[in-house]
Image 1 (cartoon, rainbow over the protein chains, first blue to last red):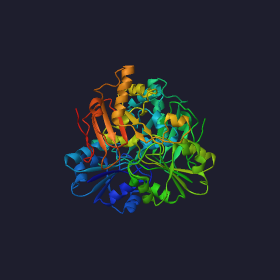
Image 2 (image 1 turned 90 degrees about the vertical axis):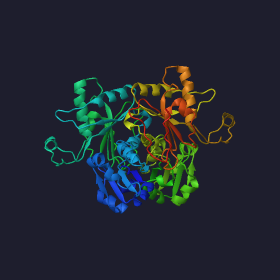
Image 3 (image 1 turned 60 degrees about the vertical axis):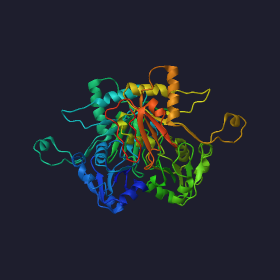
Image 4 (image 1 turned 180 degrees about the vertical axis):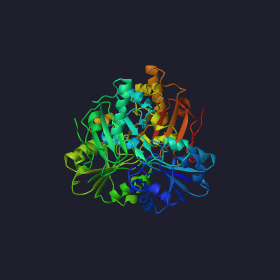
Length: 272
Length: 272
């Protein structure tokens, strides 16, 4: 049996009891390590599960999935995913390959940014499509998200912006030379996302993003101790320090009531 | 401390370890019992938590929230919600009231229909706004969802339709006479939802819903044993038996690849 198990958003105790029981039955346990991250170390997880974790990077998942699936028709194997297995990143390819090999699959869900974001006080019903904002380079500034924010706003829908994560990426030079040397991990901050939004607005000039656009900056969603949810104009938020990753951003379409601070331990600043 | 804890979608083991630990620290534990349901009995939950559960119906949550919050500034109280606390139904009012009373709040997230739906194989990025389809009566057929499906389709976005649940509702007669006699619970089936969609199409005739519209019927999402995910035209799905509640429906905007059966234990019928 292949178990694909969501770990939730913050720490080792965010796994479900069902997921934990499944892990305990597994001979091999893989941790997907390139699309998101928990706020604790791998060692902490290993101690909690009392299992050795095998880190599964993009290369392993995309090119060596048969290694992950080896013997999973006769033994139990777990593939752990931060958040939910079918949330922001899906692992459909692994599922399809497992089916081709006649391996049974059990999905164990958990919270992901896609639903936990409701904690900011805006109703999930009032969100349009979710977008991703990738890191710009000097020569590559993909901006298809701009029109999607525009569409959402025209329908009075909020936009959840997922911010880029670069883990175990090669520089162009190392890639060209075939050297498996990896850059340090990078996580886009709310501040960087806002700068990129301003940059794209400068090009398209459709008044989708303005310095006065209302938005919510979020960091470490799901942490009961140091999550931050701050609301303000993009200009105001661009000057705030949201601390360590992961960060997300919501472009607000409308505001019916003043947003509320849903948790006393978090800093929800009413900036305007 | 007030803990607001998501229970996930299926059974007692879908709670997170964090949520379970929190419950064990609580003197009173409320189970929100009117917007959704697990697939197991209250007794099973009580046995698993080793705690007595207090059922919180709409009246209690909306009119007697101070009873729920009593002494929560000095003791721990848990309020359990099927799915995620800020998923399909939010409990913002309870949060606001708790804050007025200076009660600390901790939110413990879980999966909800809003993200677990990704298991059907369609990417969450390609969903537009989520809609609710309420039970029609002879004289009340609200249809604002129709234009929202139309908007989503025009942007090539799928629509997740949450189907109505009526728990502890009074008949008009009993309501008028002030008699607290409640109707048996009702849960809208995929089949009923499709009939209502056809009914509304008959009125508006904008070709949003046709007998050939592709859709996915889902029942008991999150169950590892008897979840169903079936894809087909609305006409085909309208003749399928999806079994016990809860049911949901997705109106598909486009289909890039054939949908896949993500779990061998489920019946994903390729009907066309």
